[in-house]
Amino acid sequence: MSTAQTERNSLRVMGLAGFASMASMRLCDPMLVVLGQEFHVTTGEASRVVSAFAVAYGVLQLFYGPLGDRFGKLRVISLAVLACAVFSAITSMASDLTLLVVMRGFMGAAAAGIIPLSMAWIGDQVAYDRRQETLAKLMGYTVTGMMAGLWFGGFAAEHLGWRAAFAVVSVLFASVAFMLWRKLRSMPSASSAASASSFAAYFANTLEMLRVARVRQVLIVTAIEGALVFGAMAFIPTHLHQQFDMSVVLAGSVMMLYGVGGLLYSQFARRWLTWLGGERGLVKTGVTCIVLGLLILAWAREPAWGMLGCFATGFGFYMLHNTLQVQATQMAPASRGTAVTLFACLLFFGQSSGVVLMAQSVDRDWLPGTLSLAAMGVAVLGFFVYRLVGRH
Image 1: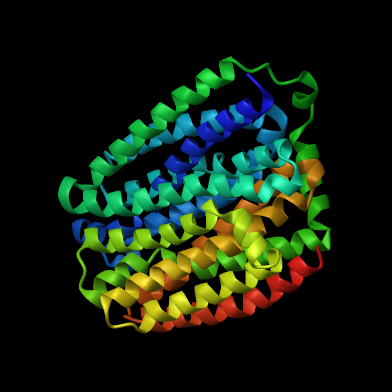
Image 2: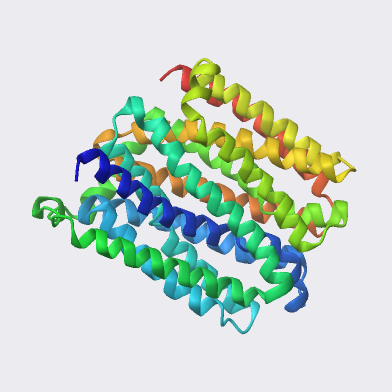
């Protein structure tokens, strides 16, 4: 098999792992109202299942980076996928909200080793001039997984029961784990030189990276992006349910348009880069779409406008986020696994912070105002990202 074929096959399997990971991550968003009703808590309190996943996902990045660089990224990804299969099965049997939150934390801890290490693998294997396009292909899998998770989470909560959703996701992870195991058997073993390094050296290297101004800048804007956009995203299905009196299934289905926007970008990433005049053009267009999308979602009174808002926000977010992903793969090429997982750590630390803050607004019926504030924050963030990309 040629090198190009091997690369494509590896990307396909990692893409399926990323699909499962993102489906699991977004599975609970349309379930929050149903979970709140079943466990007799407010929707804001039920959102702990989202923030627990995000916190664990972010913190564990600090460990997966060194593990990936030391033992091999594909090997660590395969073990993380297998752990996700086990934890998702246990989650489906949770007897109360506390146990459900704890198991979602374990799910986040396991899933943390999938998408960021896949990005780092691409950074190792793919030249910079093809990297944005290749990362966009991986993004296509993850966006599709997000869409599937949003729709299936709402459908299962209303028709099958939320437990069935986690059981199905467990089977999906188990299938991908088997494919990764077969792939690993056909690959040469990791070199002993890679496994000789100590964890202390990796964490020292992380501290050394943080002394670089550009690394700090990329990480800071990434954390803010996560808080503003991902924090808002967790409650958009709830907002659609409350604002337009949509069913849980319909709200999850409309939210899929967020992913459709991402797919439209990811499938034509190279063309968008050319049409818009490079990375700075992507940033300007992406930020504009996010701001308009969030404002439309906040104040529209017709469902059709809500659909347009979801689409515009997703299209803009993935345009902006893909640009930051590329910056992350290049900010420390000598330790790319550690750098990219640190990037993911800050992204999901930002998300968990955003979810906690926005949970206060959903129980007070402040979501329209909070979404508007998030839109203004994205506009300011876009100015700094534009300057950051221009200095690269």
